[in-house]
Length: 410
Image 1: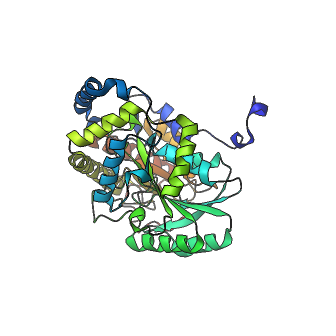
Image 2 (image 1 turned 135 degrees about the horizontal axis):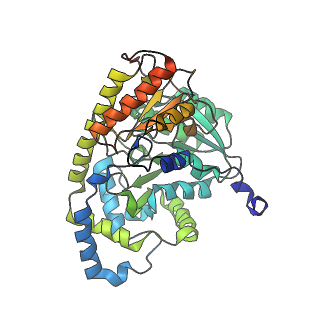
Image 3 (image 1 turned 120 degrees about the horizontal axis):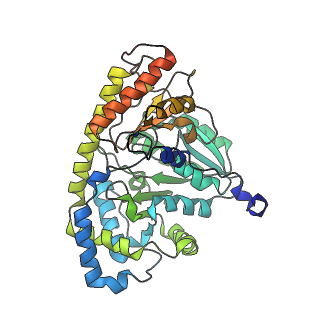
């Protein structure tokens, strides 16, 4: 069979997260592995109401094919929301509705990457982006990061050394996997470098509205004066992921090419789910929903951090996010998180080893924890089980960990 496959398929691998999630489906497992929103916050009854109304009012239309660009009313609503929430002022004709933001990543690879082109990304970076881009056989060049984002001096060196660099991929708001958020200064400096080197910036923003501490920061796209930024958004983390509706915002000239690529991929995103979201935005207050989500996630993050502070042995460092779904743990270099996971699964607790988030390998002493999907009592118990395994493996008693910020990761 392998001889029949296209060359680009030879390097593709299964998602480690998906494989781990298969092992965590037993109800007794406390899983910090997935990037799942809290399903108990999904607006099920409202969606039932909206579904009945939409199908009764326009059933024949929403069950029919629709434009590749997306439902006009939804694109207008997205444009208005981006202006209000993110300071990004675009027309509906600069927005393409996608089947989740993951499709936006795949279309970006299809449009912008030739084999051997360089993709510059944070270190660590989102595993789904690695998977989407690697089908087009680029070279990944990861850039060291700290608590304010990419280290810009390192990014400048990478850009100078990589004449084939096609794009810089970043998750500036509560990054998956680290939970870090870029400072305003780093955002401005990134766009200056992108303009100087003429490289596209792909801003992946699934978590930007999930800030539960600190001041809001502008989207990179709102600072873009040269049409360099491709913005990816989604309703998966603030409404519900099962609808599979996201969007992509780019300059008109580039968006035309995205439309052609999407036509070849799936013709259009589901007509029905687009209209359901458009009707939901007209009928209900999504901002109020998000305020409730933020408060739940703040509480769960605080519980996880407090329990880690109390239970983790010394010498383990971790981020303290102000939003999003994740935090990042750095273990002593003598530990391998994959080995640790095997021991933890035996005690019915799961996480994602961090090595998967580095496209060029290494960093096996890291791991990602999700705090959004488990209630507080399960978070406390899961962290205690993880801590027991850590103490046994390290031979150390419980104690407060090192509290300094994580060092840049190369």
